[in-house]
Image (tube, rainbow, N blue to C red; front, side, top):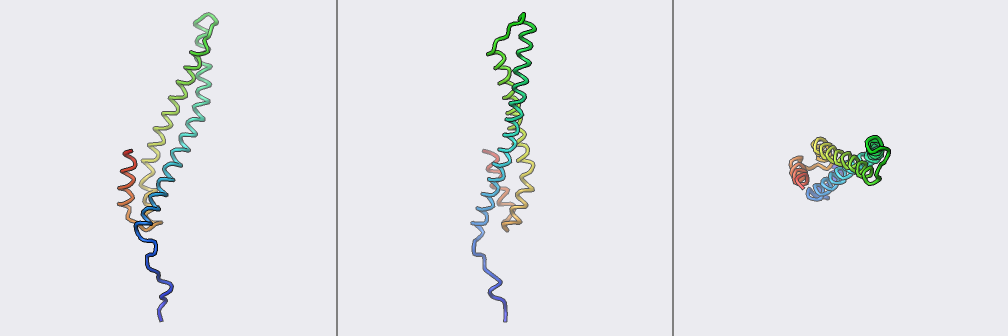
Length: 127
């Protein structure tokens, strides 16, 4: 007697497994980018505050004790933008470098070819 009940055919199907693996890759990609951008934004707030203070001190020193709030604010916002865009670049680099390992893990977990997931990831990275 064989264990017919233990050997099950592929009920889900390769297309559905590939779809779910792609969905999980997208969630991982979005979560990773969001975390890095959030850290960058928070660090940018701190750096922006320091930038505001630094520009204000420069104005006090070179304008005989007078500082314009708008100029100080522009200095702080400029520093925040630099930090935030740097974090965005770091997020992109992090995702690109971590993608092959993540795709290999997803391919093994969902039993789909890595080549299909790599093709989809390449397409998404071009967006």
